Image (tube, rainbow, N blue to C red):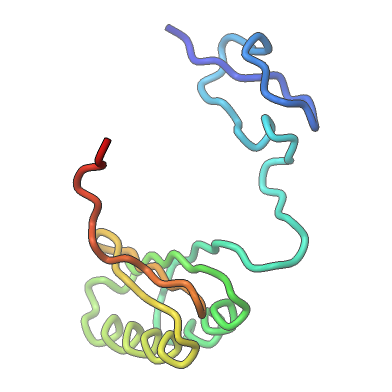
Length: 129
């Protein structure tokens, strides 16, 4: 069974009868009238980054101070215990300074939140009906 994609009409609500056959995905950004990769003007957002080392902390800190949520992949330094510990320790200091939160996701990901946004570290096992 092929997957469907809605025609790319801007500022059009999603209608179930407007699909093109033969595409392998549905572009949800187009369905809401947004250009792919377009961001809302101003304001904080969710940012994704790879951490290559301790030298990136100032740039990442600025993003956190601006109120962004960071999802950080530390795979490039996962095997260098000293660099990894030094980087995470400094990120924890920044988070402590702004009263934010930090948590690990899986094996090589961190999420860092700004002031006023906490991370619930308990995993949801089963949703109650």
